[in-house]
Length: 50
Image 1 (tube, helix red, strand yellow):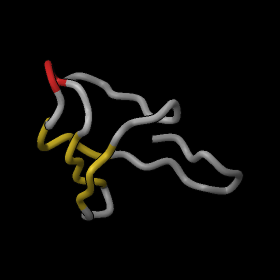
Image 2 (image 1 turned 120 degrees about the vertical axis):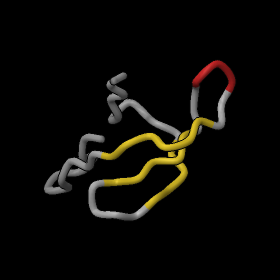
Image 3 (image 1 turned 45 degrees about the vertical axis):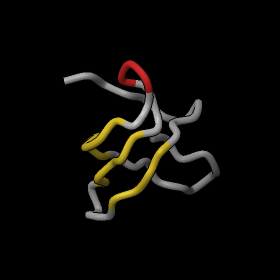
């Protein structure tokens, strides 16, 4: 996810659970800093299938 304010760093993580219909959001994401959270991706997020 791109920072949405000046000086905010980008964050990356791995989707570990999908709670939406047909693979859509919300997602449970494990971020690279180790914390886990519920994410409804906005325009500052990029989902890259692997």
